[in-house]
Length: 317
Image (cartoon, rainbow, N blue to C red):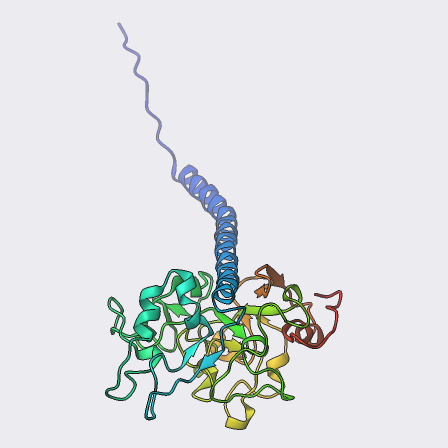
């Protein structure tokens, strides 16, 4: 009597290689799709954060009789020297309206003492890396697509200053044109939220600007702006050519840069910049967020960031 036995047949080497090749092709096809989905999610989060900044501005204005936060404020203490909260900028002023009361109070809690203890950026904030406001990570200020954010810090300020992926429009929150906007020491907004001549829907309030842009520039969210290393402040739309540092005269009014990589050499710190593909995201003064493509001309961009030129935005906007 014969017993039939089923012989188990294994895969041959060629068959295994074919299967591996098919899997590799499938992975190759899926990875770009996954990356696109991930970037789309990051873009949506970035857009939502810009929207939060726009809402915070309006809540600030509602609280302070329509006043807009200033680009940077220098405060004096009685008898001279720095006052509590000295050097607070537009982003710092919005902290109470972004659920960041502890950081805001820390920056404004200084008393007379050793140098810099009264400066907003060095105010005591428990739980931060060094106990200072400048090392406080504020997630709403950081775009998940920004490759120049390293552990919350600007890539060229790791361990020193936390970075921001957003900056405020000098022409709105700063001193306006005279005739070229240049740095100084302290700025309050030239208009309030209710009397922007060109209207809130026609004026850019915030724009993306990468946290590191060249080895000697970028955006540090708590930096005081003004004439103290203004290439680090959370601002765009101004020139400090008289100080010999970037941003330079002329470049400040050029359109945003989209994916200026490598950022160490390709990024121009005088201009807004975005790591997103295809468009720079901006928040208008009415709180709406929109994308600005590379097709926008310099003339159109200047009209969009200028709150009082009386011009209608062209078709390429």
